[in-house]
Length: 409
Image 1 (spheres, rainbow, N blue to C red):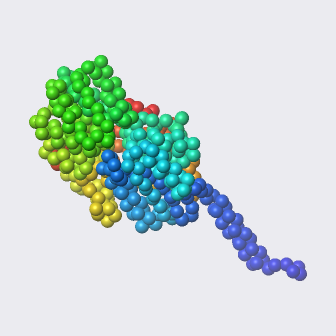
Image 2 (image 1 turned 90 degrees about the vertical axis):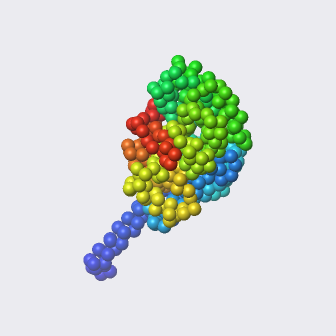
Image 3 (image 1 turned 60 degrees about the vertical axis):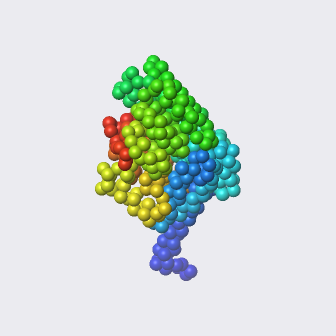
């Protein structure tokens, strides 16, 4: 027919149309909220780089280094991570200021692993009102597992009440006639530990014969330790910060006090706590763990530890391999990368939370054998297992079986 196209041209035209439609469909499948694009994922973070909890600053530095590693390897589904981390000095009013800056000025997709119970509590309502993920909070408070009321806030480490019950069970099994002295902070985290510990002791809570508290801003806890020694207690239970833990360990040794000493998990770093306190002084302390201690010779040939060590050598050579903060930060960053990979091209805040709540038996390089990351739409506690550990003067050694959380489901 006059004016008609050759068959070959029709085929090419049809092919071109299909390609165009496919391209549009592929483009249409991409969904972004503020903080995400074809080339970038903006992640916010708030850390105590200064102030009384600055020992945790290495967590943020490790995370920054890990995201640089991911970027060097091509990013996440082709997108590079921009990690924006601010200092709050462990002060809740400053945390609020920094969170607003990250959400409203920097327009991050989410705020990730900000450190502390009181500091994160100060921004929880704001984050949920704005519907911005407050993801993998650096606190073991049970409040971070409440998806019904706060669906945009999720914790990461095992919760404090479970940890406390484990110590109570250990004491009841091994020292049923012991006399317990207890020192704790006054913040919400400390209150959860103490309430969990008392609940774990049950009708044997009168084994606690002396209690002292401290403020996180106190320059020292030495007077409290002196008072606890005079009580005649033979068990010391410490719910401490890294700084106060190092002071307590040193003072107990100076007083030549020899109690069975149990210490909460966030304060067991070899590099940040035990080394400054004196490794010999820390010998025999009992705690809990869910992460491998790279100082422990049993992990020398472990594949996960080798990967962590190679990462530290290349991306964070100034970081302290002896501190648990670098292991913790590495593990948190690995978890977030897994979530973002699963988001694919749907980088919306809603999908971030959906994927974060859909993890099942995810293994990480530095989790202890038998411990995995699992979440659900009604389970916002990613890590819910512990093992008891004891310090031998060089490293922490695990003993006993993996213990599952009693709280969170």
